[in-house]
Structure formats: C-alpha cells, structure tokens
Amino acid sequence: MANSTRSCADLASPSYTNFGVSIFILLGILVSYLPQHHRIISRRSSEGISPYFVLLGTTSGTCAFANILTLPTSRADLACCSELSGFECLAGLLGIAQVGIQWSCFAVILLLFLLFFPRATPLTTPKPSSPSSQPSYRTALFIAVTCVLHAVITLIVSALILYLAPHHLQAWANALGIVATVLAAVQYIPQLFTTWRLQTAASLSIPMMCIQTPGSFVWAASLAKRLGPAGWSLWGIFLVTGCLQGGVLGMCIYFELRERTRKRRRKESLDGDGSGGEGEGEGEQNGRMQEEDDEDTALLGNER
Image 1: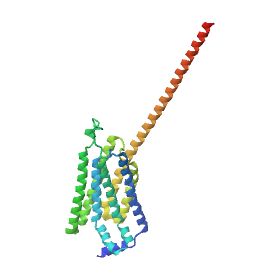
Image 2: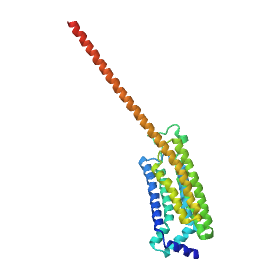
Image 3: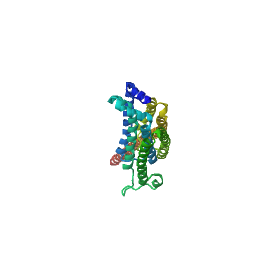
Image 4: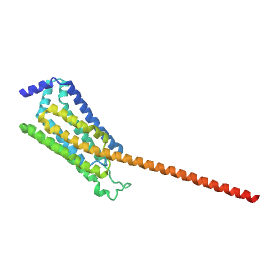
C-alpha cells in the first residue's frame, strides 16, 4: 500500500516537460505511420513488404502492448486514476497510450497488406519466375489469421493470470517483453532479404522509416525514464528495432538514389541521341540542297 501511495503521489505532480515530450512522441508515432498507410493505398499494392515482416511486427506489437498493460507499474498507475485529476491521470498513462497507438498503427498495416496484396487476375498474369519468389495470397491470409489468433490467446492468458495468479504478473510481463524483443529483433530479417532481392523500396515508405528510426531511440529513452530498470523488457524492444530499422532505411535510400542516378543517366543518353539525330537530319537536308543547286547549275550551262 505504501508503494502504491508513493506512486500516486508521484503522478499527482507530473512534469510538464515530460508531459510535452510524451505528447510529442505520441503524435510522432501516429504521424510516422501515415506515410506507410498512404503509400500502400496510393500504389494500391503491398508489393515489396514481406509477409513475415508483417507477421513478426504485429505479434511483437501485441506482446509489447500486453507487456505494458500487465506491468505492475502500469497497473498501479491505472489504479491511481481514481485518486487523481483528469490531467494527472492522462499524464501518467501516456506511456500505455504510446504503445497502444503503435500497435494499432501496425495493425492497420496488416489490414492494408491483406487488402492490397498483389494477386494474379485474368488480365495480369504473373511472370514465369514470380511463383517461386513471390508469396501467395494464401500466405497473406495465413499471416492475418495467425496475428488475430495470437492477439486473442495473449489477451485470454493475460486475463487468466491477472485474476487467478496476480503474483505471477511481473514474470508474465517480463516473458512478454522478451518475446516481443526477440520478435522485433528478427522482424527485419525477412524484410532485409525481401528488399535486397527486389533491389527497391517498392511499397515501403522511406519517410516513415526516417521518422521512426530516430524516434525509436527517443521513445526508448522516454520509457526508460518513466518505467526505470524494471521496464527494460519494454524499452529494450525499441532500442533493437531502431537499430534494425536503420539498416532497412539505409538499404532503401541506397536503392532509391541508385535508381534516380540510372534514370538521370538514361535521360541524358536519350537527350544526346536526340541531338545527334537532329544534326544528322540537318546534314542530309543541306546535302540535298547542294545537289539541287549543282543540278540547276548544270542545266543552265547546257542551255548556253
């Protein structure tokens, strides 16, 4: 009870600096995913996004969300809201809101990935090499069903531990955090492979990664300050993902710059060929005019 009272007392005097940073991170998380959502919708295709990247990212986000909800620190903050004002409660729960927004935004990517998954139609037949290299729509459906089942099972198990064995919640939260960290660590491996194989960013949003990569480190620092060493299983996730997402970002930027360089050189080459063709055309026209002048001169000489 003393620890709970001390925690509520801490929440009763929130730091306006920390509140401002937390709001900035919350909005940054939301805004950072919008370019990815827009890119998939505008291209009407999720080509280039690895289905296993989506699977691991969604399940990792589910574990991270369940982790912060089951942490004793978070449950104590939730319990304190009955004793605090609305602003104080909001400031104390921003960490939970941040993880929840991140999970929701990635769930939208899962939905868009399934809705805009490239499928062969009678008018568009796949290339001969595509069946062995491109995932099928059945794989995309399997990924979506697996993510939903994982979320339901995680919710049920967390609820059972909460009501039947609450003294094991810290261990369960740590286990969820470890699973989330492992999933986040391997999440980018299939995406790195897919991006390297395609040699293009395709439907991956570079602006999203430009925002999220440094934002992951800022978010990890914010959570570490809020939760302390006991929350290592949560803020450690974002340290790992920040490093790995930076690798994908660097690869996408390299391929994008290389493609732009190729297009510029191709355009310069076509412009050069066009100039040469105009020069040849003018030379042929001058030659014909010279021949006509010579013929006129010869005719005039014969008349004389």
